[in-house]
Length: 233
Image: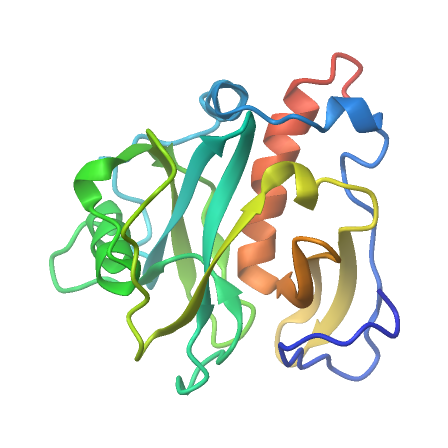
């Protein structure tokens, strides 16, 4: 992606170097499309924690990873964070936010999705909690919950103080050659970290998904595509 310009500001530290390739890079193109919702649910089932089981470490925030199927392809619903926000303005993220006092993490993810994009909690079937992830900056652990919608969402509205835009991207687009790359950053006080990035000239012509959100999508795609690969390549 050298030379390509994106809307998002990526605060690369001095000395950033390229990282590895996509874990699914060895798969034939026809193995990456279509990605059906049933395929996602089956592949993730063994690695998900029950939604009602609270993480051992109380997370700083929780996010919802909303998936639905349309025209035979699984899509993910994302948001573009408002440019008026002090933290990560303009970044692409999942709906989510901080936990309220005595609130369960899964409840926080569903509540925030309803507040930010008017996605009714009752319309989401939560399959479980994915592996906890760390924020790229500011620290803190995040609990991602995989949610399935029975149909493509309708009537969604962006909460203007928090969300600039709603975006829908198919998982197959993110799995295409050239859509994913990694970078190794030297983080002050943390040492070296490998960060994930996604960009797609058709689905995301001016945008890059990076950091924590990209890490969750990498986790998801790795589980789905490698589980369906009998050679494990």
